[in-house]
Image (cartoon, rainbow, N blue to C red; front, top):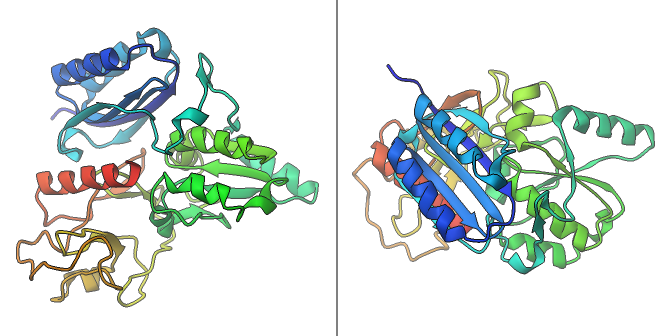
Length: 347
């Protein structure tokens, strides 16, 4: 049986013709039988694709031949093409939709004016050195707020954001101004969001800003659950979450009974589909899984869902132990839900 893998990478580099890169990437992936999600902009490329191992290796080798992509930092993960409903390759104004493309400057070295990159071991060294100086490092979560419900760095600040676009509003509100003279480490899943976030923070007067190189994925590969990370990592594909070891803490709480859980499920209302945490017992119960406070996204017009999909969620990542939370939902349905969640949260 052929081995399958997923690769995750991004590269900030000026692209004179993003549309030409999009067409090349689509043709390359289609020829190799890969699926996933690729975003191209004038600032570079951001990609997650999966397929047979040999095909993925050929894809990575060929992509690295492009002049601006020679130094790609590629992260490998368990999974394959079936973790995605289709291949999506798009040109957008931004690789990550902060809604501020005019604030980002990119040159051959990457993002100009971003935070200092730290490897996982350098992160620990920074924490220790600042503590010796009597200063505590502030961890600043660069993900959507719900992702932190099941995993985050110990003591981290989790901004009140539903989508990436909300970060600019939060930073401009002044609520974090007291942090401007403190050492701040931004972190996200694989690092791409913090490339932009750290630059936005520095432009707004935050003096000592760092970013975790390779994101949570790379940190978990190094330290598993024996470091500063706690819980599970939410990922935007059918796996939905991964753990770095059997010792992973369960930080999430069931919205219905408050039991510990790391399992997200979609609201049964097909016009809503909001992700909410429910424990296994509540998810298996006879009552539909609905938003606890009522659906905010759309009127609740859905009747009882007897298809089996109503109590299922969306969405992988890392060379880690993983779970597929939705065994009762067909592969295409799970994959489509995942794609819609990614589009909704990063649009």
